[in-house]
Image (spheres, rainbow, N blue to C red):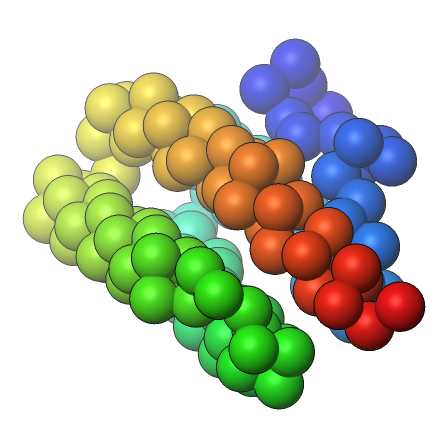
Length: 137
């Protein structure tokens, strides 16, 4: 692993077991993609990783949105908009990467994607989790 990898630690925990598990898998997939990108082994493997991350993000966001609806989360619309922006941004990244045939610009863009996802987990997801847990007490 290199210094740009995201290392899972308890600071990422939001307190909803299913979502924490999915966050951990998402970070693992992003790290795997980053390694493939740096090694430039096979473009098909890099493209597969890109697709897996996108699929994981979609399904994860759907689960988060389900949890929010089930718990009448008052900031649902705002949080859902963040999900849509993250997916749109990731789609743009995928298209840029694929159209540039995997240029070295992909690494810095990938780092930006990681920061966006981590920021979302540490701010919006934690806020949502705290409110959901408080409403269930």
